[in-house]
Amino acid sequence: MNSPIVIPDEPTIRVVCAGIAEYQGTRTMLEAEGIIPANTKWPEGYDDLWWDDGKYRYWMVRQRPDGAKGPRKLFVSIDWWCLRQQLIDGNHVTFELERKKRELAEYAYRNSAKGQYEWQRSFDSYAEACADEKFQAFKALIPGLIKPKRARRPKNVNQTQGAAA
Image (cartoon, rainbow, N blue to C red; front, top):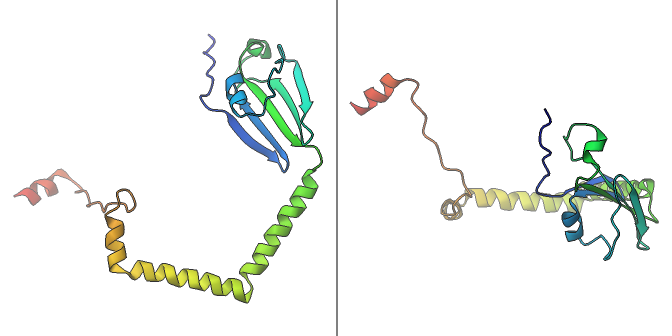
């Protein structure tokens, strides 16, 4: 007995690695992202399609939705696509090195005298706001900002009846 194929309501977008992203979704979902060129002839079956726009290289192929089971031939006409977008001039090593340089610069700044001063100033402002009774009373008026305090539940029915008597 085959279970029905469930198509998600939203596209899935994930970063594969630096400079490469994948979009999965129906034709309409991918077209709504604005990265499919106008008048694109969509592939048939499991054929794939390649193109580039000068900055990115694209690859599109039909795919079974995540979690779908069964042989590949069941999905040959299903409207679910994977579109991979990759920077032409970049590679993941260059991107990873740049990311690590930024991380190291941020770490060095946080641990510098100026960074420590800014952190302490921010913490002092936070502590002052926590201690400010008028500000805390104002925050309590905003629905959903502060969780309401919950009363303890009685352990058994006798406690409930005893409390009412």
